[in-house]
Image 1 (cartoon, one colour):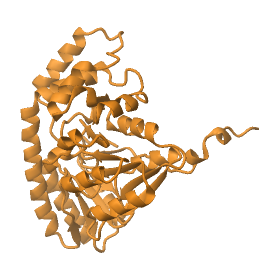
Image 2 (cartoon, one colour; image 1 turned 90 degrees about the vertical axis):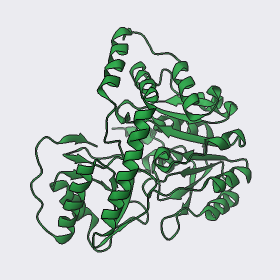
Image 3 (cartoon, one colour; image 1 turned 120 degrees about the horizontal axis):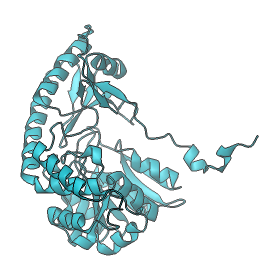
Image 4 (tube, helix red, strand yellow; image 1 turned 180 degrees about the horizontal axis):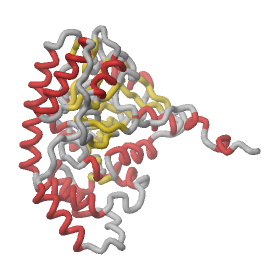
Length: 371
């Protein structure tokens, strides 16, 4: 009997799949989502528009209305914007057109693992740059790795997932100026940091910025992301975009979210306050180190407790966090999203119980689906 797997590229078989086990939890703070919803009136408006549109017809091949709205929102030119089915699709498209056999991609780590995974699948070589002693970006180390490897692409998530740190704009500008390799800045969490490198796009044709509607924009379930870059580069990346990649319902919802910028800005400001309050609470829990964060999550290092045991204890209390202990240098770490005030309080109470070895109260019914 023939082996069908022999036709799968060795580079694919060599990597571990990006996956996350499905679990249900009363308090779901494992995926850095916005815990607050868009107003019901906005949802009804989107539903009314969707009902009025033929569902048997394809969406626009190029979502021009959404692209124009994204350009106005981001402060960049429309021909330098590419919309996608989540930023993950655009990460894939970007790497498809830039990475081949032996292509070097500089990736500081620990960070979002999809970049290294796709680089390996495409036959490229990830040049891994360790973060500093406090899990901060080492700008000079990144620059050295870029020069030494003659990398075609350098990726920086700012704020970084899962550590929460940022790379300063002047350091990013220097990276762009020091070579012609692409500098990719993933700004999935930029709203919570209050900083962006979009103004640098006008000065550096080798800069690419990626953003998502899954975090601050409260549309994780509808998969919308966008890429900002020089128009010439966008035209090439667009060649790897699948046809009709953003369905009409997601387009309508994204436009509605952009129209509700005031509401979303208020939610972000509230989440930043909740983040700082949660950080203060975590820092006084014995046996816990909470790393500074400019995102909507906090990396928690456990000094003595086993992170998997604490993860399961929290889950027994109905609280789902992210176990990131498999990441490089994060062997004792969990990541917690900033939730509502009530969710954050439940986390602190359950965490104290877990670290003290106490039995958790039984999780309440009515859990939500989580991945």
